[in-house]
Image 1 (tube, rainbow, N blue to C red):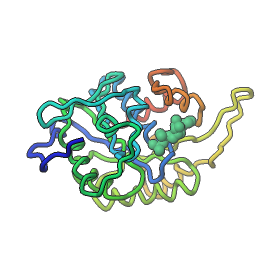
Image 2 (image 1 turned 180 degrees about the vertical axis):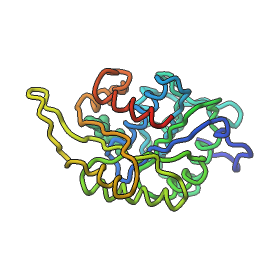
Image 3 (image 1 turned 45 degrees about the vertical axis):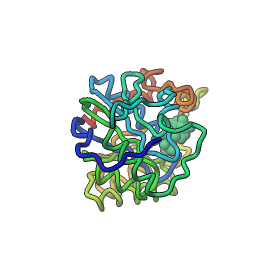
Length: 258
Ligand code: ADP
């Protein structure tokens, strides 16, 4: 990927009505899965939607959105790739999928600038940014430069994930980005044989944390092997099984982001 020569004069984000970051403190809690399903839910609710994969070191949007190949460029602008009606941009479209990104900080920041400001989104109602996990440089740059309407924090209910989610909330607070609310993922598992609900990672952890911090709980997504299996096939549950409990939960959360 060719880094840009300097910061752009005009950001392509200026044509995006609202930019929402989907973030987590910890990796593996279902952030990218939520980002994709929320984007698809908003699309089905007649929004013009894009997803920016800001996880430069471990981009998952290409696989989750069943997109492959390289993004083309027109002049200084990168052209997003489109599937299921959602415009997507990811580091995964700019470098070899198999190649790890082993760049020094400056290269990373230049790439991030390009992804943030030089993607030809056209007019969008909502751009969902799939944030990398944690609270480092990338997260700060996105928070400061993406004109965020706010951030949605996703966590599973166990203590180790909640502690990191709390740090994520604090980071956004430091840069004055409002938290739109929290999502509890992998809330419970419903046994397919007897329909018993088991709270594998604990009960109500995210709700308690949200209450303590005065934040709304936007919704909860059950733990369901279908979510994982369909994601791996590049068929997010909102499009593959729109009637499922999980898809309906994502749809309800998306409505709160309008
Ligand atoms: P993160 O972006 O936080 O690293 P991912 O979205 O990549 O997490 O999800 C991590 C793994 O958990 C993936 O294999 C994904 O399919 C799976 N997963 C996410 N949410 C659920 C869920 N509600 N039920 C079952 N599996 C899930």
